[in-house]
Length: 568
Ligand SMILES: Cc1cc2nc3c(=O)[nH]c(=O)nc-3n(C[C@H](O)[C@H](O)[C@H](O)COP(=O)(O)OP(=O)(O)OC[C@H]3O[C@@H](n4cnc5c(N)ncnc54)[C@H](O)[C@@H]3O)c2cc1C
Image 1: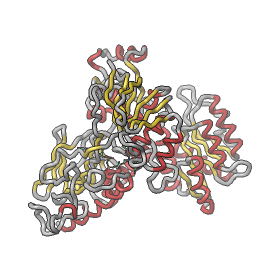
Image 2 (image 1 turned 135 degrees about the horizontal axis):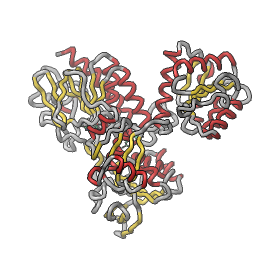
Image 3 (image 1 turned 60 degrees about the vertical axis):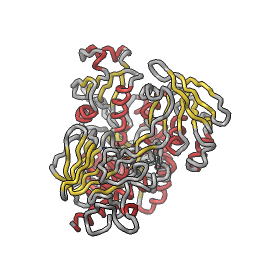
Image 4 (image 1 turned 90 degrees about the horizontal axis):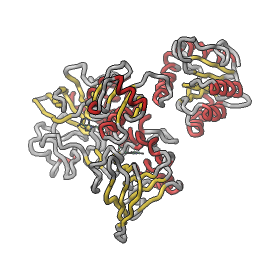
C-alpha cells in the first residue's frame, strides 16, 4: 500500500475523533492516486482517504483499521485487479466492515460484471471509468454512499437523545417517527442510570416523558409530531403561497409525482403527515421492484426518491395532516390539522392506505406497548431471542416474518385463511417455509392480548376445531390489510363502497360524467370527480397495490396535470 494517507501512518489530530475512512483500491498507481486526490479535495475535511494498490493490501489496511476501532464509511474498488478482483475484495471487506457502502469502478467493457456484482456482494453503485469530471460523475455517487452509511447509524454524529419508557405508546411513537424519517437517535430507558441522569440534567419529571434532546441541546417535553419534526430539521412550512401541484402523501405514488412534477418545472409541494416512504418505507425488503434483482429495502428506495424529488426542487413538508379539501373556483385549497392551508392549481391525492386495526380483546389498550402496526424495523432489536407473533397472510406479513426471524428466537405467523397460497407471493412462501424459526398457524385468529404494563400473552383460537392456546409473547405485529384514509374528503370527491377514490372511466355512468361534473369533457384517467384533483397509488379505486404501480401512477398523474393546466 502506498500514498500519504496510508492506514497506519496518518495520526488523527489529538483534539478530534478519528475521521471515518473512505478507502479506494486500484492496481494502477496513477488511477489510484487520481481517485484519492479527487476524494481528498472534496471530502478531506471530514474523512480520511486511504488508498491501496491491490486487494490484499486493502484488506490488510481494513484489518488494521478494525483493530484500531476506526470507522470505514465507503469502499471504492476497481473491478479488474490481479490476485483479487474488486468483487472478491468487496466480499472480504464486508466481513470486516459490514456497514461500509460499496462501489465498483469498472471500464465500460466490464459493465456486465458490475451488474453481477450487485447480486453477489450487494454493491450500492458502479462507476464507469473515467469518472471525470468528478463533480458530475464521482461526487454525487460518493455523496449518496456517505448518506447511506450515515443512515446505518455508524457515523459519529451528535445524535438526538430520546428518554422514555420502554412500554409506552407516546415513547414508541417518538422513536417510530424518528426512525421512519431516518433521523439518527439514541434511546435511553427512563429507568436506566443514564436515562435518569439525563432526566435530572433537564430538570424533567415523569410528566415530561418522552423527553427529546436534539443535537443542539434544546429540551422537548412530550413533543407533538410537528415540534419533533421542526427540531430535527424536517421542513414543516411551505416557502411559497401557491403551487402548481400540491401532493398529499409521501409514499411511492406521492414521491413519484413529486419527482416528475418538479423535474418538469411545476412548482411542487408534497405534504406528508408522518414520514415519507409510506407503507413501502416499512418494507424490510422489496423484491419485485424493477431494477433491483437482489431486492432493496423500502427505506432505502424511498429515501433515494425523497432526495431525488428535493434535488429537482420539490418542497417536502412533514408532520402535516390534510383534513379538508376545498375548490374555490379554479383554486384548490387543502387545510391541515394544525390550522394552516396551502393553495394550488391542482391536487394529487396519494394518501395510500392505513392499517386495519386488530379486532381482539386488549389489542387497543396495548397498542404501542407490545402490539404494533407495521413498524417491525423499529422494534427488531428488542425482539432478539424472543418469541414474536405476526398476524396476517399477505406479503407484508411474510416479509416481516422473514425479517424478524433473523432476530427473534421464534416467529409465529397467524393466518386467518387455510393456507398462504391464496394471499402471499410464491417467492415469499418459499422463504417463510425455509426458515425453521417461523411457524405458520393457518385457520387461526388472535382472540385476546393480555399484559399489565405491556403485552405479555397472546391467546390464539384455531377456527378449525375451536381450541384456544395462550402463548407468552411481548411483541405482536399486525399486518391485516388496510383501509383508505379518505373520510376527510368532501362528498364531491366520489368514492367506492370501501372508501377508495373513483377516477376517470370509473366515474362514468352509461358513458356520462357524474352529476355536478362542471366541465365539457370527461374526467382524465386519474382525475377524481372534482376537476384538477387527481389520485395516484393505493388510495385509488381499482389500483394495483404495488410499489411499481404507485410510482407509475405518480409519474402518469403529472402528465395529466400538465394537460389540465394547458386546457383550463
Ligand atoms: C410491510 C409492507 C411490505 C410491502 N412490500 C411490498 C413489496 O415487496 N412489493 C410491492 O410492490 N409492494 C409492497 N407493499 C405495498 C406497497 O408498499 C404499497 O402498494 C405502496 O406503498 C403504495 O404507495 P402509495 O404511495 O399509494 O401509498 P402509501 O405507501 O400508503 O403512502 C401514503 C402516504 O400518505 C400519507 N398520508 C395519508 N393520509 C394523509 C393525510 N391526510 N395528510 C398527509 N399525509 C397523509 C401516509 O402517512 C403515507 O405516508 C408493501 C406494503 C407493506 C405495508
